[in-house]
Length: 160
Image (cartoon, rainbow, N blue to C red; front, side, top):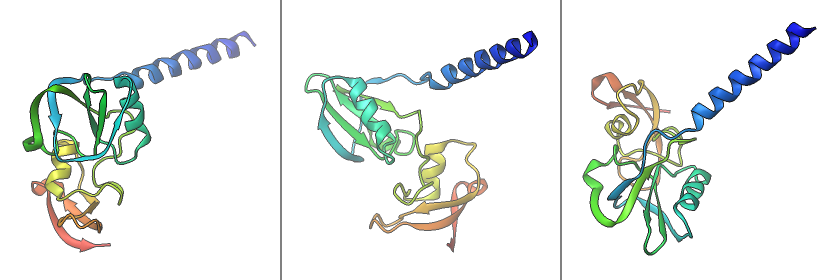
């Protein structure tokens, strides 16, 4: 009977360590920078952690900009990795990428990418070839397209 109790304690301890490690941020805020042109929601909040909380509640939120002086939170539907040309210097703001529970770009129709290349830039070099939601013209009408990530993120027009 004692061995069952020890086994239970070992399992609980291991589970807690894994959970704590998964919840830690590995990216800090980037002061003096903001992602411009991809804000889908803007609001006033009392502290940056409120902005983080609001971003985690929005399925489309990929990152956010926060202005400490004016206490403005801007939720973005892109990351600086997906759109580096829109990542601009702005001393009043800081930028942070959502890490916990972020839906990968193109994985759901509510968060379509403009191209397969944008998905690869956003999600990294280990992105797999698969079907992704794209809205190449930006009309709000997403289509499911196969992206071959081995060919530099090119799409084949095989729709759903």
